[in-house]
Structures are given as structure tokens and as C-alpha cells.
Length: 139
Image (cartoon, rainbow, N blue to C red):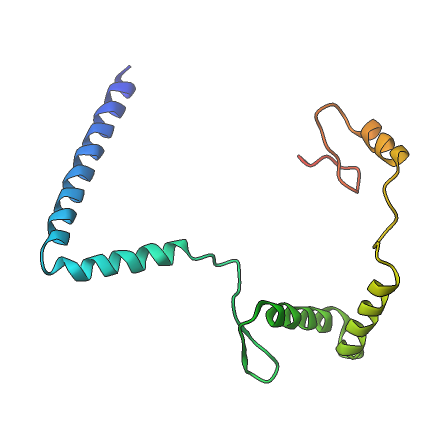
């Protein structure tokens, strides 16, 4: 019981402190000097909303900055291809081979049959989905 009372009092104290802080902030923003504060707040908010997981530009092998999405994607493809396969293959030959394969077969793999779906559903426990390795996701 004492915990709940202390918790309520703490919430009230935090709310009062927030109100006071916001009131002081609004007073500063309404003044002449507060104009620069607005820009500081806008920059801080913009920095917080940046998506760090997406890369919008990258340098190619020559050091020039690539900005277009297609060029950035192509650079990442060549980088990982060289990383995983080594320098022994020509990357442009690999992409030409992939393009040729795409033109020859529009479907990347055969369609999934009803029997495969039934077999996968039979292997699943109730409410548990298994991956390709037949191990439930929770594990």
C-alpha cells in the first residue's frame, strides 16, 4: 500500500517538474533570444529522427560519392560479391550471368504445391511456427 502511495506522489512530482520546465522553455522561446533556441530544438529533433540503418550515400572504389539508390545498391552488391567470393571472378561478368539467367527463367523457383503446404502444416505444433530447419522460432 505504501508503495502505491509513494508511486502516485512520485508521478505528481515528475508532472509538476515537467510543467515547470515546459513553462520556462515557452517563456524563453517567446523572447527575442529564444529564436535560436527554436533552431536548436529543430536540429535536435531532426537528429533523433534520422534512420541510421539506411545509407543514402557511399563511396565507390575510385572514391567518388554515389548518391543515387541504384548506384549505391550496385556498389554494395559488388562489395559483398568480392567479399564472399574473393577477387578471382570478374564482378561485371557475374552480373551479366545473373541478368542472362533472369531473362531465361522468369520464375526463380518452382511454385509451392498443396502437398508441401499440408506437410509443413502437419509438422507444426499448435500455435508454433517452425523455420526451414524445423526448429520453432522461440528457440
